[in-house]
Length: 227
Image: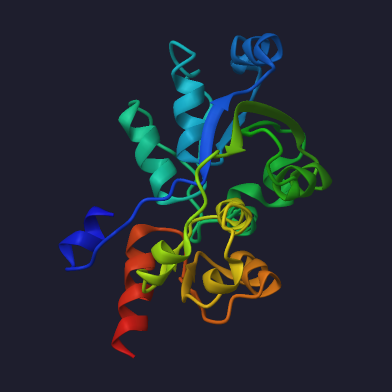
């Protein structure tokens, strides 16, 4: 939002996802207390870092850390840790292409994935097929924020929408009464999966950013308004 303001635009916040505690405290505590038994830890999001590291004193020194995205890497650094595995792109598919996750390098490795409840299973399923032993640590829950619906007047005052995830896009759609007006607005989405969902929901003008970072989103916005 600040970056949009700095560029001369007006940013409106409509937080369609709220973070709550996962209902698995005993299981999660057991996992966290036995991290020394894992070879690799994967953090799916900045929230997964925050919700995990707020609960523990320190990570085992021998644990290799992997992240998806620059924001997740930055959050890890805030807690004093450095990720050894960072994919070129900001999704599970790109992480799976990293040399450290090729078959020969992870066979019989024990990997823990820190994520929210109900996250994508693509990463874990593929790593299991490659011979790794996968454990999920679901440290938080994402819920639809119980917000008032965006009004027709509010939608009429917007020039574009931006979302940073498929779940956020679906929640935005569900929380809006005037969906006809909503789908008329240009929408910036963070990649192909979100683009496909936006198409399914009926949006007329979909602008895919190259990834979910602020830089990519701002560039997509600039490109759209400069066309």
